[in-house]
Length: 636
Image (cartoon, rainbow, N blue to C red; front, top):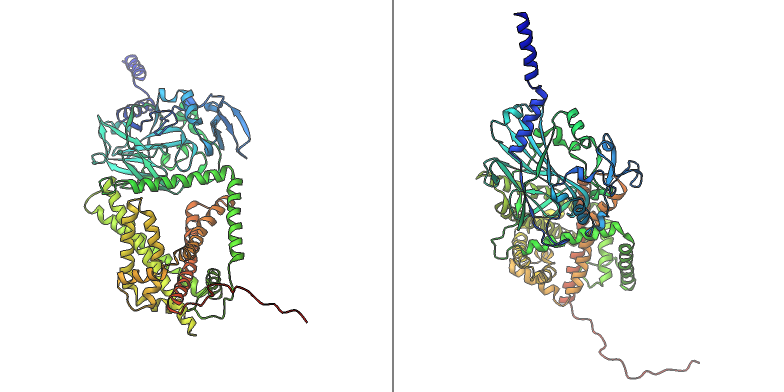
């Protein structure tokens, strides 16, 4: 009997599969069952529009003599040409360097990827992971690697992913059910859907993914999406077809870290999968450096419930947004040119400064004070008087500008309330969400203009009080301006409505710009004149600007440009001089903008008083023709 029991035990030991092997088999089976279908934007011709890259096998990147491992001290330190997977293990802050210049990509990376044969065998990397602090949930991740990112922030290498959450304790239990939630990565964030949600397309238990051309942001359907991120900035993610459908091969990375490093040594790489560059043009970190690699459930709690697609059923279609997307792309290209070759840009800036200095030299700047505000002033005198007033009374005007900071927070809160209210009738995404986002943007723009209008009205009232010799502070100025908030709001709402209609057509944008200058004096007109009906206010501003459009546009436009560009310019400088997070830089830029806007209000007020003086006072007599001859007396 004892001998039989021993034999049975030995046979059982030979037959029973080790738990680790069984677990990995379950992970592989789970990953194969829910493997994604990838629909990339089709590219008709080489280097033309469309997506040239596919989810790529890392083994095609390694072993290549066109790839270098560099670092960690500077971009030029060469460790090895043609690194293999074992060369990457534990390399902290090193980076891979692919052939080409990410700031002047051209067709280099596309042809390189084609040379590697990357499109012949697309691969996604699956990873099944649980989180001890969040028991009862299994996360199935699929990671996509692309050789190049051709979004606003062009950079070598690009990692994107999707994640499926199961209510289960392990992969074996997950095999018996379906996901409850899914998230598609887009830049630094992700958009979620329930497994049965309308926005998610599923084919035979396989989710369909639409990577955006260039950025590879994952979307649920084909559309033009408005995207934004802290690293990449604002831009457009285009997943519109026609498409090329892929069924990538699934390579499952074991959940056990030791087994993962043994099967896929490169997963232990702690550096960057692309050339080292400034700021957001830097190569990305790999999956193991992302929060979701080890904390997938916690990360999924921050997924967004919606993404915003441009509505295409309107009167004007997507032409406005296409214009916006093109403008953003051109701005990104300009920044890339600046980083790659700053000399021409610096020469251009120096030329502009030289012209500005010449104009300043030729302009009449004095006298500035002591002069009453209701008088004619030259172009230079208006700027000089505004600057002098701002510098002499910083507490007053900086105090007036501080109002814009809580207004910005209030606008953000109201927009959030609007979008949260939409969720009460169900999760809204895609074009419907885009329509609501557009409504929120209109509301935000209107309120921002009202806030700026109140600052301008308060500034005009403060100037009148100072001119009369009365003391006034920020609160007193706002108290005077508050009496005119309703007529000011009515006029600005009408202003915004006309602006939206004109800009939506794109071809009428020049008319919108012309009207913007023509109605630039609305705030002081409302604050200082009697007839405050919306149409009458706009007509009165137009009357004051008539014949002085270039003068008013250059003064108000120049001061506004200074205020608008000062914050971003400071932020751009800080990007290269400090390691401040981009979110902090955005806050700094916003505060600088808020504090600089009172200068714009001062210029606008002085332009208003100058226009009134020129319109209401008797014209200055000028000699129409020179005398035909002059007499000279001999010196005695």
